[in-house]
Length: 114
Image (cartoon, helix red, strand yellow):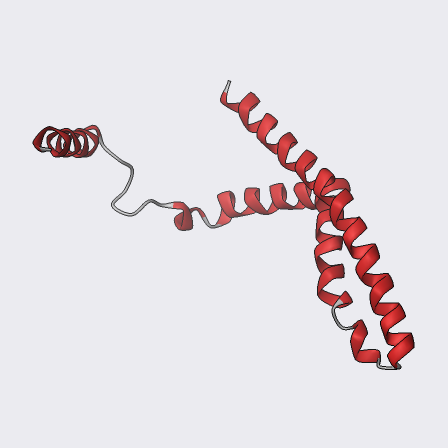
């Protein structure tokens, strides 16, 4: 059940990226055309500079939506789980029943006092 929910969330993220790409691609095309026209009219090549960061975002979204970014992220996550598991430890260790109950009791007395 949890795996199905995770798969649905990943599918939604990829679908969101593809949908975002449509709008961002249109924005990028208009911005690039504007920069080209502006650079030609004013004869200043510096006007092309905004295209660099905009193209990085465009390529990232293309890679996430239609490329292999999700596969590479999965492989990197597997590497972290295998080789760097100490980075995943929770502060004070995993929650215990006692710590959860203590927090629950503290929260319930907080609401009763009001």
